[in-house]
Image (cartoon, rainbow, N blue to C red):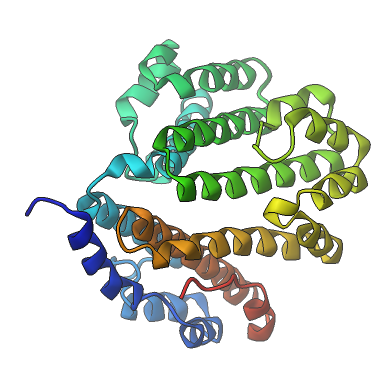
Length: 325
């Protein structure tokens, strides 16, 4: 393979951007009569590769193809670290629950990942958390203790997710890239707000909430914990004051429905990512393409759910996210 360069990567990327799904593609998928027809339509469009596979498998393959393209073509894969570490934490959750509960987990893993499967397995089986990256060690050990001692998989997941968000902020700061830092700020902030709202709605304890939330760079963790303990309205009041990330609009969306809020949060990230398209020299266009592909997969998951449950296609289309193009 020729030596990688930003110019080569971006020139190659523009053709791929043109192949991102359009509204009429999504409308056609949403109108599928059943999930078998949807799977065929996706394969015809080049999404997934396994003949006869169901939609979740095709989307898993699509995500892996996207990551392979990026890691094969990006001149600096370190720039993807704040995003790639999500795969590592996801994989750790799968391995942790699989080993402790004696379940299969290999098919749940997401590739590529910066942490080898063997290291994750040894960390759990032998409590060798020192084999993991520094930013994974503490949450991995805490999640292990919770799951092994109490069996509380939800708390173990929340501890791992919080560790992931903290790692993303750390790695974004290390990148010294303004766009990457802005993208991670939006992503981590809204993940925290979603977690706070879930905790408030289910009346979670202060200990649980403390374990679930992180610093965001927008509002303090302390303020979010206090708001979560006060209920949904207090969180929405706090959210409304987060003007730099569109908090007021997000709060109004939540008042309509949690689904509208989820859609707003995803759209806010894509809106921020669109800045990447207009940067001609740098890694940013590849970062934007990655987020566009991830948003596209989210849309296809929504469509799959709609087709599977027989939802009216117009209702399904209302739930779809803003397109990158």
